[in-house]
Amino acid sequence: MRIVDLINKKKIGQALTREEIDFFVQGYVKGEIPDYQISALYMAIYFQGMNDEEIAHLTMAYVNSGEVIDLSGITGVKVDKHSTGGVGDKISLIVIPLVASLGIPVAKMSGRGLGHTGGTIDKLESIQGFKTDLSTEDFIKNVNEYGMSIVGQTANLTPADKLTYALRDVTGTVDSIPLIASSIMSKKIASGADAIVLDVKVGSGAFMKSLEEATKLAECMVQIGKSLNKKTIAVISDMNQPLGHEVGNANEIKEVISVLKGKGAEDETTVALTIATYMAIASGKYQDFDSTYAKLEEVISSGQAIAKFKELISIQGGDPQIVDEPTKLPQAKFQIEILSEKSGYISEMDAEKIGLVAMVLGAGRKKKEDLIDHAAGVTLLKKVGDYVKVDEPLCILQTNHANLKNVEIDLLKAYTFQDHKPKQMKYIYKVIE
Ligand code: URA
Image (cartoon, rainbow, N blue to C red; front, side):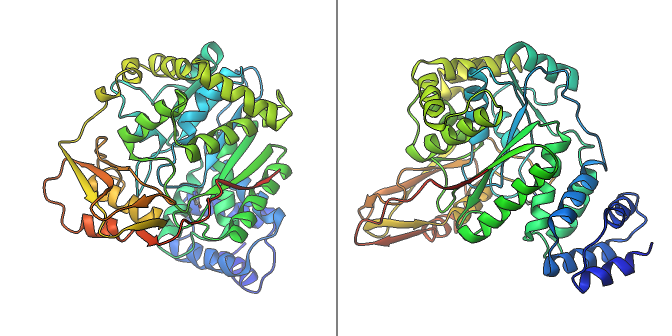
């Protein structure tokens, strides 16, 4: 087989066979096929697309390129969740204790973030002592004993995805639905999930800017799950403004605590309860949406959810006192209020711009090697639909840098105002099962 023949075949829109897909994935991982030929092939895929069979084969070729985690030592259906990524997205940390409180095992593998703010693992590391590098044995033991555990992704999970993702990032081929779908689903399948709930974000702060594109991506991932016999549900949720009021690592842990105590923002709480409900349904233990949602609300109001989060922190070596005293989380030296230059109703907040400001403050990484400042972040005092007067604070920046030129200007550019109250935004647009 020759890679140039596969490039030519895809260039004219023909489908690749399983053998051909295995050939280029394995050849690339072994270093036998150079970057430039995979780049040409992925550009052809970008323009010509892939059919459902090709996408399922590509997913499995990524899965088989590395370690596949065996979670058969955990009793019960293991449900995982994945978000396509957004600013202020702390849903994973809210749903772990919620779903575990229903007696459904949660074995969560998460990554670190690149760009914007940190990933779930970075957020947890703002809790002093919290260990995310557990061995697979300890991970499984925790899930069997306490019903939940969270670890960082092992280095050898889907290496073909890691390599091709890095290449796509610099060759303009990230935003291809078959390539995103196979990349995401391969990681979930390799980490041992029996069922998967996907939080597909749509809006200014998401990969998918329109509902039409988000629906296509969601349908594609649900189809991959179906063809590989993994129950998959996709929820399309809003990312036209950051989720909740906190962006940044320690800030987001603070907000997780508020939601689990029943004092969370409405958007954050609604999305978390919806995802947790679908995880319960995907496990097969619950069937009805409304009664499961109501049960999860009870888990919060009874104090069970926050107690379970405290337990998660304790079993992974962290300081559970941060739940009662969030001021024990890392604190930044400087707190800077950003005052509004205009008056009116906020009609739009560009989530991506706010995420980039958080990154400049230290909450995210520009390069893989960068260190995260867990104390850095943004507290959003006003959101879409709120009325603001001139000189009223819009948000507070937390940073350890003394001189941050342009940050205030960049942040103010994220807000758009109008003189009448905008329509209430939807939090959830669609569910695809
Ligand atoms: N997230 C992933 O894991 N892969 C993609 O291709 C895009 C987003």
